[in-house]
Image (cartoon, rainbow, N blue to C red):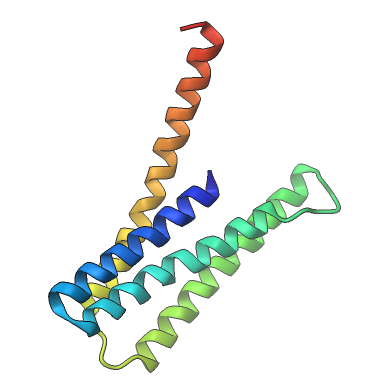
Length: 128
């Protein structure tokens, strides 16, 4: 499920970047791509932290991994924003934030997929 969401975020980022590139030009295209990647890369870091095997399989180790993953995700996001804002010139701010927000919104599709999967599992158990 996590891989599907990350791939969907990446796909949305690429499609949006191509749309911006095709309609408004190269600057808006790479701006949207960078915005989306600033969402996807930290999310992938968090997913890897949570999926990595641990010596201690207990709940405490999972909570520690989640805290470290979230802190790393936040740090990566801030760092990447800083790098883009200082090094990338010119940058189309509207396209940049559109890419970031669109990739963030794809995360909600994961919740919808999970709810649908839970519903299908419940229907199978009830024999419907």
